[in-house]
Length: 393
Ligand SMILES: *Cc1c(COP(=O)(O)O)cnc(C)c1O
Image 1 (cartoon, rainbow, N blue to C red):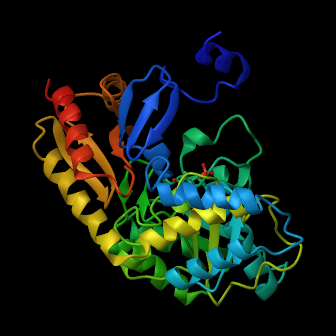
Image 2 (image 1 turned 180 degrees about the horizontal axis):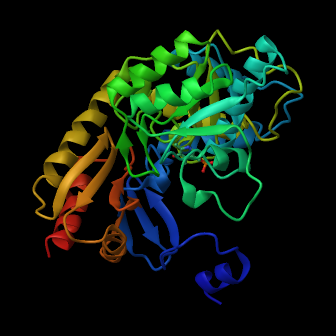
């Protein structure tokens, strides 16, 4: 039995997969089981931030596997302490909770925000509503699905978790109205600076400023879901830096550890001690292999030259996209790009690109690029040539 038949017989069919079996990779190239080469503009949905099997990253993980691969959170490990200190220092946050995914990081943020209000205002105040945005995406667990402001996700799994109210992204009046309607009941506002799964849709500076101004009036926590936008993706360590704001909580995952599972919920001095002993946990959270990978990613991404390169490469992508007739426009920030097409369907283009040796993503009806942060100019040019040939065919 071939890999695909074996797979489909034994793995639940929750994903629409291409008929490609990836076997290995190096730098920004993946290699199929059949030896076919692919340039990767998707990096495992923004997880392989340093590409495939980056030498420093692989060395750190292998060395960690040979010393201690895991221990329960009954004990301490140095690698987790080092990573936590580095992450807090680089981001300006006070403390971190480690999980294994974006959903888990957001689940932690939701619990933290509710407990913050519970501790301060009491159980009877029922100050537990979290405002999230229409078209957002926050994960697949029941709470994070409930937080996700897209009706298509709210099916089958009833009852969903109560306490989420959706506001239209970039609609300041809607934000003010929903806050007024729920006055005294809202504990947090949670948002993505650039809605990723929602179609690579950035928030406006005015709307972000309004969130922070409104929340400050009423002791409402701000939660930035930077699971996709964080760790260099948009051309800064955190996208909040580009908007000039400091959320009380920032969640990270996807690219944070270079392609091993890791999620982080960062909290500022106002709320970093809310989650106390036994109120939250994760067996694998802060796993040493993941922290070893994360240390290498952070060392690179906190280098200003590395960030400059991300922004230069983003410009190179945009200049190449401008040469394609079929491209109507480009949205997004840094190396998180969404491409609007004039006549062709993104889903069809994705398949054709794969057949021609280029891995890309879609988001809603846009093509989406989340390339490795260190992608070479040569691979950008090669990949864009493949894309142009397909789009302008
Ligand atoms: C991918 C994503 C998530 C969910 O992350 P998982 O690791 O799949 O749980 C949450 N929020 C945003 C913004 C994402 O892009």
